[in-house]
Length: 427
Image (cartoon, rainbow, N blue to C red; front, top):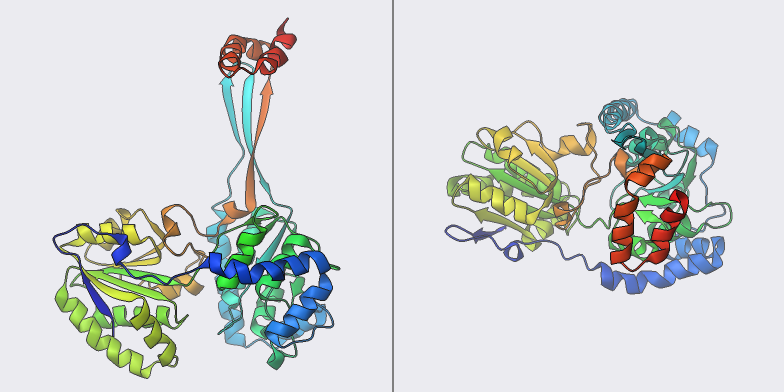
């Protein structure tokens, strides 16, 4: 079911490791007319596109307060309790990410302060394709609220089976978090609506949230008009394991990731051939019994692999080269092994910290970099919603102390007016 890549005795080339191909550039060609239609024709275009792609003819873009209240009132008690616990844990973790203003006395009379200021308005996208994601409401809204964002709007695709509104569990999660501005709009048209604004919907400063390749392409189209968090692609997991790992746990986690999407990528890296063989047996049994078998089989056969390495040192090199969205480390002394990893969206240490925990209740954020971008990009956090502003406050004497240096550097760059702007103050 899963192919094997043998890297023993040779260095890792990340191009040998499978990964879903996310051709955002190709999707841009399909998405750009959608984005431009919303930019040019506003609300009417959003309504037409929603009918075309989602089969819903909207009379209002915004979900009513009554619909939000009803969704929360009808929410299953166990689901509500789980969401409340998830919100509490996420809030505690994200609260610790806040940064105080830093005041630096560079020299006598020379002060530079770095202020952290939240963006004014954000648009949060919650996907609703194969499944509903109330957990993504939590992961987007909580850090924005903790950061102090004053204006916050959520968009999620409408569904005919829910009366032309988003999934009621998504609406309930919004209500639980106190989000009052929710729109029944999905896909590229939702991203464009947030970026440009339409009748009744003000433009935002930043768009965040996961989505399919068309959502990612729409983000690329509007980047620069607004800020974006990332161009997130298909989900992925890497598991670094040795012969101490329980094969059935590993198999369960591979299936859990593969059920997200036919394009999900799963990588199991181990120096133990015996473990890989045992996982293969456990995996066959679990795949045969899983609810989304066809989706799982496609993902495991399409862009997944067992990778055989010489030892855990090489294993760390391999997972660093791949830069997984999610990385599980299930080895002896797993904490020490995990500490050597540099490239991952989130790291799950030991047998009792599966990715499913991070998806819902760990307190960490599950909006994470994909496609190897963990090599240079972080997951969603409070910092995603903050801007650092340097505030410079010098006295005359402090300016005079560096006047000659400014004259030298300005002269080297042939920017005489720069030098004069300082010199005129010091004459």
